[in-house]
Image 1 (cartoon, rainbow, N blue to C red):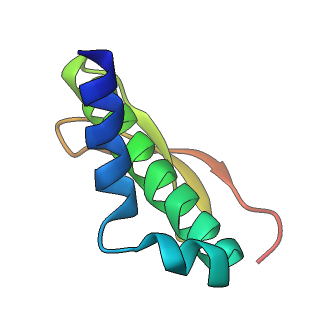
Image 2 (cartoon, one colour):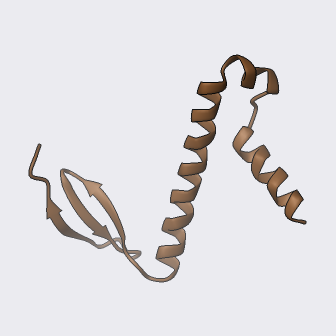
Image 3 (tube, rainbow, N blue to C red):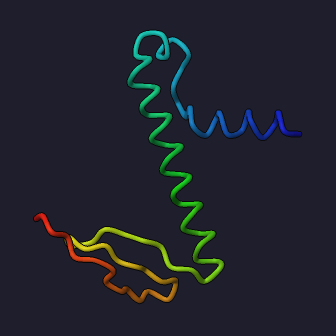
Length: 82
């Protein structure tokens, strides 16, 4: 069962990349795989936080903000450097 999950996750991250690309462009492929993994992890973290009615921290217009599941935003800090 866990092997099926690992294979499915690998297919999601690999997408249309083929193994020959890994050898020729390993750095770019590695960066793309990590980028996709980070994006997915971030999306999952936001979903979980909002499901528990917790805010997330975001950077917006030079400010650190709390964003709540209902759409409210609260300024936490102003950026000192613009």
